[in-house]
Image (cartoon, rainbow, N blue to C red; front, side, top):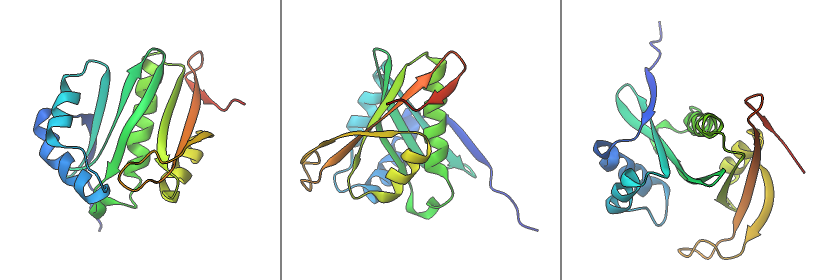
Length: 161
């Protein structure tokens, strides 16, 4: 008999920063610093969530609340936990949070070569809206700009354009 892991999504706390920074270092060429995350924890316009698997922080994600939009700042899954749909889980939680807050749309930038993330965002209903040439200073890589319109009347997502 296989024991299913206990998965919990909850708000990120200051106590989570060291685990989140570890995930950052494993996931990004230029990871955010502990100081950057401490600032985000004090930012009343920021929403961050973590996914715990059996009590261990395995993934996290965040967004800024800008007027009627949610701007996804970062999403990452620890390499040991990739392939378990935790990135999807974080995105769904952030999208639910955006709808609860009556936001009209969400946006994000993603590295042009991050095909796994792009496929996830497209599957969730995000559409390509443009390119930011040389957006990532660490590599000079372009970023794809993606958007989704949220229909708050019915609590559903809609694809527009």
